Length: 246
View (cartoon, rainbow, N blue to C red):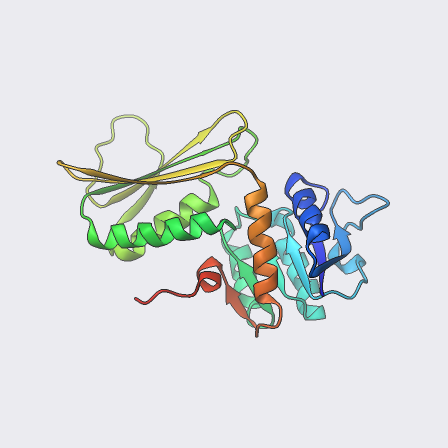
């Protein structure tokens, strides 16, 4: 039985993953953590004294450093499902992964992991301009999304010398080496990521659409099953799928 602590348990995604943990026959919810703590949860991971096998974090990136400090102290594997981390916070994640297993992915969806593989292949084999358009609900704070940034980085690694450009305004001619990233915020859209590769004669469009936020909770549950028992290190959805051959 995998004993799970959910961080960010009072939020929409925290509630979703909590419900899925409770429904999973091989998991047991042993603690809930949230800065908005109430009589059913504590405010900090350090306040949760339950014995656990893994922490699933759907809180905010500002709390990542503190959460990781406690996880390292207790030797707890962590599934980080937050985005928008600063350079300092990303460094903290890398440092923690030297001591504990950390599963960190910009998007916990299996479909997005497969999209990333297809984007890598297209960037490698298909010439032409690369553009990314990501669309989310009007309450999303960070832009571009962490997934869009990760997709852009995937393309950049396949195209040395390219430059990621987020948004355009005014009189700006597109440079040949640009990877354009555009953000749309409206309504209650869960998440859409579209990647376009275009030449003068043809266009390839790769698209992933999340129909329900539960897809990210599903991914977090699978990541928890995957990471328990692993040695210290930084893992992501590519590791879960099995690293493809270069």
